[in-house]
Image (tube, rainbow, N blue to C red; front, side, top):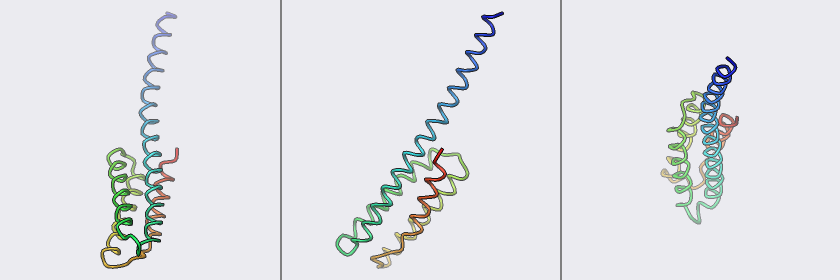
Amino acid sequence: MRRTVLAVATAALAVTVTAGCGAIDKAVDCVNTADAIGNSVGNLGRAVGNATDNPAQADQALNDIDKELSSLKSKTGDADLSKAVDDLDKAVDNVRTAIKNGDNTPDISGVTDAAKEVGKVCTP
């Protein structure tokens, strides 16, 4: 009887740990991606500040954010995170459109705010 209880407890612990590791891995991926997005947003801010010297930098920063968003979108099933990612995606599109329309110093506050929201949602 004692062996049976021990075996059942060990199996239950293994299932819990395995399921928990999946959730932990997903959370770590989210935090790492949010951190990369934060770095890209910082690069975007610097690029916009130097837009007259090198307008291609802003485009590269926006591409980097898009890449990280694609990575994050493929890893999440969380509704709050999906909304935050969609909001950031729209904000990036708005900045990209402003730059294409000749605005060398577009307002990136929407990108910054949306990136902060992604960070909040990803924080365990």
